[in-house]
Image (cartoon, rainbow, N blue to C red; front, top):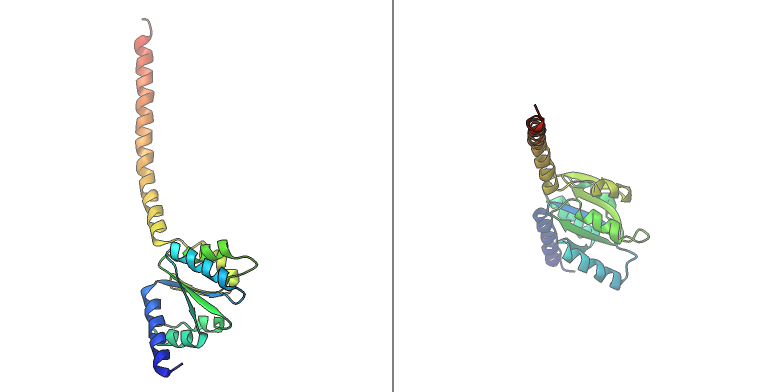
Length: 172
């Protein structure tokens, strides 16, 4: 491969990393062509971009970016694919659902401005909530006291109505 081609690929990888908020390094060594094609289809359906890369080019792309990505450098061995996503836990859920006998296996990830190295971090990555999930939780928490007040007022009105009705129907 020519040096110009390598620099173009490094720039493309770096631009893709900047475009997406989260990326996962996945080991696809033991996957055959059919399994890889199926993984690509599933990724496309779930808005995850899958890219097979040479480890040396990915290493240079990470070095060219702002920030320190050195915790991921030891993961760059064997056959590596990168899963890019704007939702932090989407690739982790896909890997968990798709993984049979550890294939594809998680090498490392950069999600929510944190580094997760090793396959044992998959459950931690799955438990990360997306921005929309956090907003929904906050809205639910904010609505809860108002719902309790309205519920108490409605139940109190029904109780008061029942008491008045009973007193009104009672013979004197």
